[in-house]
Image 1 (cartoon, helix red, strand yellow):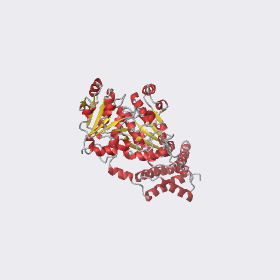
Image 2 (cartoon, one colour):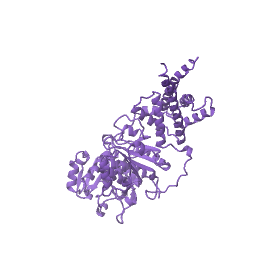
Image 3 (spheres, one colour):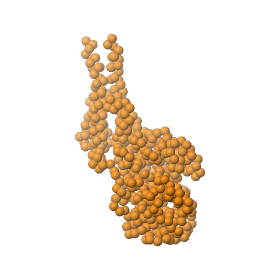
Image 4 (cartoon, helix red, strand yellow):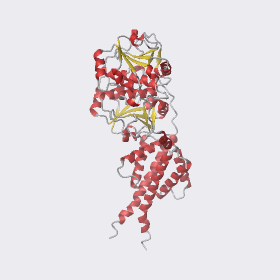
Length: 261
Length: 261
């Protein structure tokens, strides 16, 4: 029987402690999660967690990725978890308890990624830039940072709570797939747009060649738009043409350079 | 501000693993619990947990009891947690998510105890007999048993969630800036973006000079985005720069044009 939780991707980013990986997997299994992803884990920890007695079946099937971008490529909504006190964050931050319903709705439409950062540093700015928004568990400020496994458990509980039918027996009518036109762009599509626009802006000297902050800013800006898949495609096509034109225009200049002699 | 959570007594019964005692204390501290009680713990485990680096202040102040009866003596409501599959239970069992409100109401009236049994056996029949009713976390049946620290975290989260005043007022990004950031771009702003993008696309030969249909398409596309005012501004700036660059690149060409004569 299918639950909408099948669309949830629990993504552990740069986790270092095998006990935490195991604990997160156990919580995920408790709540009926079927997809777990691991980004750039500390290798020995991941191996150890996988081979631990009682490691959830889930963990053995977990997919491993090199970076957040590829781990969330198929997701339409990417949410980062944070304790939100480290720095000025550029994203909107919502409390878990006010966003549960929104996430549940999105889960009916397609894959949603829920990111958990490293035990020590949480998610980096670059990792966060792949997120549509951030979420925090309503812990007290003086002691906000939760144990990873507990944080995973609490977030998943919020997604399960209130369901009339509890995990295992949840069956939701399969939604007639939304018109293709209205389909929200997934992360890979938005990332394609990000990259081509980035190139155009560099070629136009709007941003410097290796300005990481600008890239992150742009990534966040484009994710705020909630682009429709079709529109994202069209915009990519537009920017490709602009990029081509910028290069084509430049050619005469460089061809001209040798001419003067 | 006083939270009604001051009336909650988190009671660990016959816990054996020091890591679990520590994890439960950490979760309790995260959610602003002020009273923790320990019944008949495995002594060395309790000592170890108490002396662990980073053990919550809460744990050092935890009261120790010999039996459940004395641990809950001052409580008006005693709730046992269970995975509820071991045997014929005599109590009513409710799912955590349907009982959160009831517990919160009771917390306004006086002390409420929340009991967590041993890792291996849960609460014994005798221990349960002190409870008014039992509660279970809505985990899936095939893998219902949660890690102790995670179970504590989830239960406490349920009691905190939805509170208008979060534990120790959570700091969210300044309202002022959120409001400004949040403002949806008005039509004039989106039209400015439409016009500059239109110019860029014409200069790049993506659309023909007077293609009205394309202009309308573009206008609709940009309006589907529900742009935030700030983002619209940024995009206009980007496209202005691109437009400038397209012209700058072109100059040599047009300067070249008259030369042939």
